[in-house]
Image 1 (spheres, helix red, strand yellow):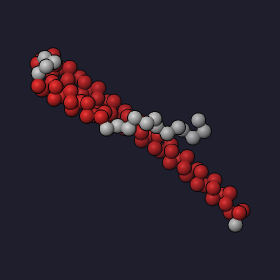
Image 2 (image 1 turned 30 degrees about the horizontal axis):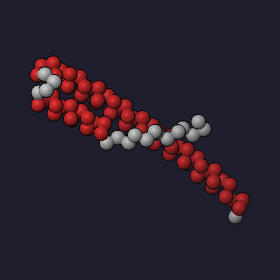
Image 3 (image 1 turned 90 degrees about the vertical axis):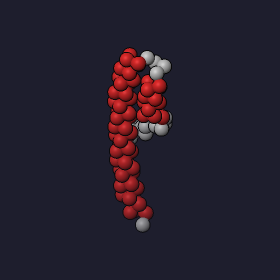
Image 4 (image 1 turned 30 degrees about the vertical axis):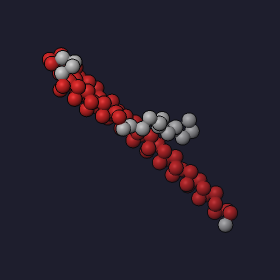
Length: 84
């Protein structure tokens, strides 16, 4: 029974490492998507600010929408890569 434990433990460890790598890649993709969309929203807000002014209602509404792009993200660091 104990002779079978080693390979099972190694397999479980390999699966965990693979899952951690997949999760890290997904976190990075989510962060890039948020960043790209925030950058695009910032350009739109700047354009509207230039046309209507910083205190216009539409400008303020757009700033709120832009803030919502990053408001719900988890601030925890992504998992460390295995072996790092």
